[in-house]
Length: 392
Image (cartoon, rainbow, N blue to C red; front, side, top):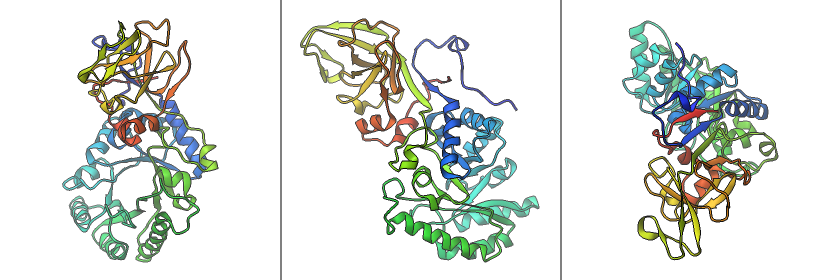
């Protein structure tokens, strides 16, 4: 089956008039995956849940698979795994979320690997295995301290024994690190080290039951970048794959990664305003000098958070300019008074690197998150589906 592709030429969509888009650098994502593998020495499982964090899951997964940059993929929902199979993705797909009830047959039919985190999950898979007359491979999630999903370590060996008797082969063991993004790897008493100790003990206990475990994984992006003992056989990478996140270790800083996403629009109109003019809803923007402002056809309905009002910036023609007044549903105003020669049609970058005749300024995901009180995950996941994704 031919995989769906991101639009590559604006002319391919004649009904598209608004010059607002998310540009996806698929090669950057492939390069990032290889760089992470180079740092960790461990295969990468690309986390492509939530539409690949807003980057477009089918196209991202297809590009990573075609490049050979990753060992497989992880999603949260059965539906997300089905979407990837329908897109022609053939590699391993791990379904990690709890919303699997009733999806056992679909996962078996689509060759999706479920993550077992309760006795009920196991019971359903055992029934599917019995009905289909074959063993079903699954991963077992162990709760080592996140207190969210997973079986308690003491229960893991018993469940592993039940799984094998019921036709479910636990080929993988996993856990999830709660604090790897905020802890110092040198602190031997940190929560992460305690979680890893519990996980290693659970691995030994489960394998002692005869479970044919072939892959063990614990590290998310922060675990992969900072905690070498967390890397095991696989690292589940999302944030770092997309070129976001910041880790201060020498090795992480030396690992080249670049953003895979640019959120862009273009100047729709220019307006000349006199001192005292108030801009936008509530008159929150006040003009203090004779000013030129750019009308941008983008707003919070597109994923530019209204919370950037009064503090955010955009990059116009490669140079930063302040947002003036409140971000509204479809329109944002930027003060371009200090950029003589700005024209209608000039590129405006809301997120990502900018280039133009005025400079090469960059709006980083962490910076936009800081302006809004959001996490980097929320920034990219929050970009609306009404904004087309274009491959560059």
